[in-house]
Length: 223
Figure (cartoon, rainbow, N blue to C red):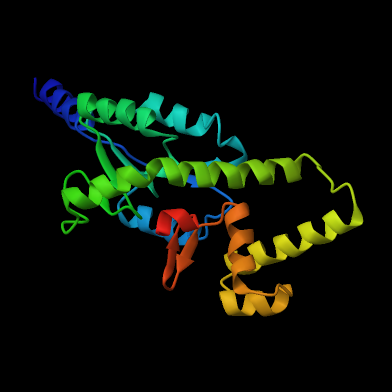
């Protein structure tokens, strides 16, 4: 009788263990991979799923992870826009979280549905994040689309086009490596810093340091 009781208790304990999944989308502009993985591990994340940027459209690893979810599990994302491709997907995902009581944590958006990790995040902050979702997804999609074309072996038709592409790749690579706009401008040979920003915008690079942060906006938007 005692052995049977212990067996039942063990089964009950195993049923109350909730899984913690981490999801990382390795986009072209993603520069904090190791830091985010370490942070996920500090959140007791058991499984970290990594999606290759070339899978931006289908995201098979994300879909596989969703199929494994059980009631009460936790999902840790780097950003909402790294997992969801628009407002419609966000609505479906939040409905899933509600029905399965899934805890959602977004590192760079500083969102925790339990309010433990980011207690200072307000409702206004969350709404601001949601309002940026579509523009961030579009920017990332453009970037991944250009990288996909390069992987498929698309070559410039003329020598001038090839030199232009090499210069733009140098600008993007230098920025992603941490160089300042000033240094990139001097090396690139462009007449103005504005040309550097145009190249970064054309390649879908999000500014991530100093007073330049987030997607590059059109001049009309700023006005």
